[in-house]
Image 1 (cartoon, rainbow, N blue to C red):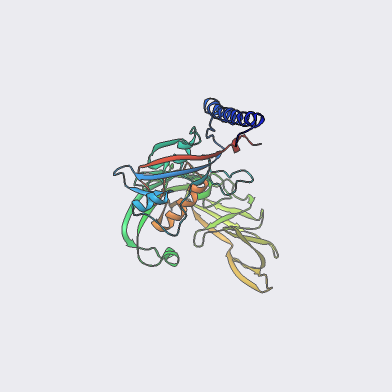
Image 2 (cartoon, rainbow, N blue to C red):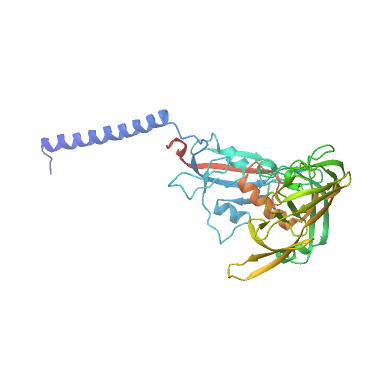
Length: 375
């Protein structure tokens, strides 16, 4: 059967169209390759990242997002899903923009920094030192500068295989532990104690350091009120960690010598004494006054009352010593440091199992979302 001329022309035209279309598509692909600029990771972007993580000292792979790599290296975990990490690139630990809530900046700083400047589809190997990885374990002599703390803390002693301190046994059991002793740092003779350590907050900058050693500071108390002058006496009760505020302007320095300060409280019936413990405070109402005691009551939410006697006269030694150390088991510090690192990415101390390790990460940027450009 022979095709008519018109049919031949139509077939030829169709073939030409297909050839031209294929050529145009190939040309378009070549143009895209020539002029397409891949997305580059910047701070504020959301990225999907595959990785292989190794120890720098021996090259052993300890983690990966690739299922086949995990199986090959005997680290496969059937309870996890092997897929790219969803990372929000923010070195300050911020939160991703709306619509990208599944992305997180809660990754080690070395990975976040390594991603910056990478292109979509690019692979790169980064070496991450401990301070930009999972942190470093504190050692004797290290100074811990903790954001929000009024003073640094110095590690002065580490004891291994000791009994768990009684105050921590309800949290961590009564087995053995490693005990870290931390000393308030930055103190020196001639300075005043930080206000958070001042045993008499009513007299600001009143406790001058006269001597200091590894565990204690000797201070001399200089009251800022004169003998006979009315003021509001505030006392730190070291026995239970509470702060007692006596009635406003109803205390006075009854006597003042080189060795002693005698403070007398002169309240009236129904005056209020406030006792603060942490975030809680309790208002006690004065019900009875004797020569040496103040009897006051606190009304509980159920209407019942509890009673407490407060001293009326305080004899304060002007020369005092205070403890400037606290000891913590490693279990408590592990939790504290983990929380601090979440809030402050610059804090480098940690008790993570990977602390003190230099790591190598093979990174591949699978996808980049330019959230840094979104308003």
